[in-house]
Length: 177
Image (cartoon, rainbow, N blue to C red; front, side, top):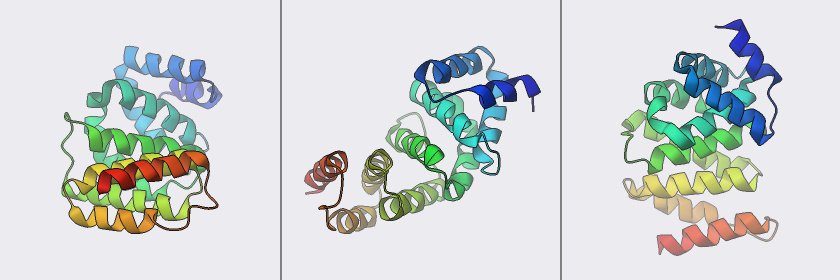
């Protein structure tokens, strides 16, 4: 692990400029992508959530760079417990399930399905839930049981949910009909 690169990650902030600067640094130095994934997937590292923020932006722009690391990422998915890491990892799951450039293995799809369902049940963040339900919707095109499970989970009481969450639920349920 390159100490200078690790320091860049550790002093980074949630501000978009900071995350973009680190994303661009990785684009200019692609050999650091494996270090970034290593930090992101090590949930014991106090900066793993910061690495997840950067990884999300990399995947949004150039998902193909992430292909060699998908297995490691999927194995780490159930271990992300910090909300600051869960939101970007759920968005990465959405990118992976929607991509035409990526072919996920059955094991990778299972990990994503399991994690996204857990997010819908346990996590109280609207953005995380929206990314998770959309990733599940994409996988439901291949596995019909996922759509049935999604309908059940999304049909529960919406009274205590945020407007953003309710909008995402209504959109997905409409598509499932």
